[in-house]
Length: 288
Ligand SMILES: Cc1cc2nc3c(=O)[nH]c(=O)nc-3n(C[C@H](O)[C@H](O)[C@H](O)COP(=O)(O)OP(=O)(O)OC[C@H]3O[C@@H](n4cnc5c(N)ncnc54)[C@H](O)[C@@H]3O)c2cc1C
Image (cartoon, rainbow, N blue to C red; front, side, top):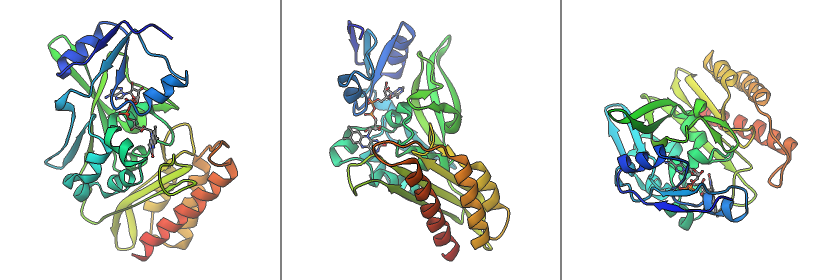
């Protein structure tokens, strides 16, 4: 592990980006992933530690026209209680409700959950269903340079993202769901609270005359990243949501996953969870 020689705690985004552009730095937000990972020796710190929690402009939720924007430093507790999230992103609010403990929710940030890129990260599944994009900032020739990309492209593998070392995740954006939007979220763990998902799923779409249009299906902890099951989405959107279509969608979701066996669940059990819980939430939507 490299010796930590510098510790920066900027108050502005511009100052944080200047530090990042001047050499390797480890970004520290709430520290709820990074500190346990560093203590166990799984990750090492770069020579500069960049504490970003004092950058007020990266905190909070805003709705502009038909887009909801969440600052990267917004905590899970703040997200859970936010009125915009309650109105326009219920599926994300539900995930925040089942996240860690109150101590963890008060420190953990949405940006940290995304950048940690765990296949079991609890905000990732609802964000995928809501069609989220991530906004990354770096120091540019004329000030702050930003780029956006879909969350599904940002997540590359366990602990791996397409963030460059000079970039900071500054926000996540998602369109406000259309009228008639329905969604469901399920997290399955071995106990009710303070548990990492053995499997999580979310579905969403616009229910119109028995069809789930613009259907989205996202699955967590059953592949190297949280994923969208696009073939299952295509099957669902193609016609009336009935039992036969639900069976086909479940089969398509099964073909999209690559679960592993670990301390939380076996591969077989994770497949059973996807089969049973996806069928259950789709049946629930069908009967609504
Ligand atoms: C007891 C316990 C329970 C937990 N329960 C859950 C749970 O139920 N569900 C769940 O999903 N997770 C859970 N976690 C994991 C963790 O709390 C979350 O992943 C949390 O959202 C991480 O956010 P953080 O701000 O603490 O990130 P940090 O630990 O500060 O950072 C995590 C990673 O992201 C990087 N990073 C952070 N912010 C940025 C940014 N803005 N730009 C670029 N890189 C950044 C860091 O460099 C680091 O690599 C739990 C952890 C603990 C210790």
